[in-house]
Image 1 (cartoon, helix red, strand yellow):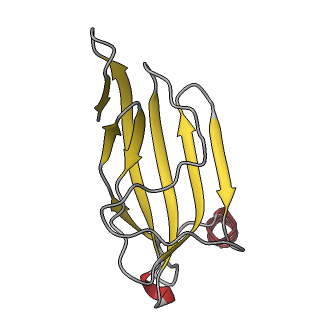
Image 2 (cartoon, one colour):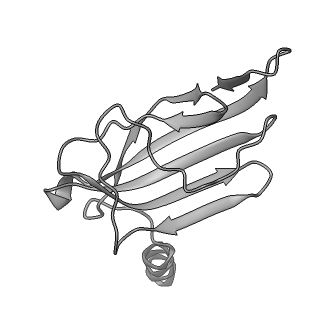
Length: 128
């Protein structure tokens, strides 16, 4: 009996997702090279707004920006904001945008993972 109680307490305290927990859906997007920069394409719908941005590299660099006071509204197909983050060739990156929808239950994350390399001519190439 004590084992069952202990196991139950451990499972409750570990925060394992259960049937009542809300899982945030993820919407993957495409990343392209645009000139000498990066363009994370927006899959956003009208009325949706970005409330936070997270960018991470495999080298440990990161950018976390909260936009609650000034959310960004980006049209579908346009480039999502990168807030001056410096991307470097030879590294892998992951980006996530918190998107608040008109119906809060439809809020989600826009995500992308990619690598950057340079061609012999010096052109930037985006890989998966």
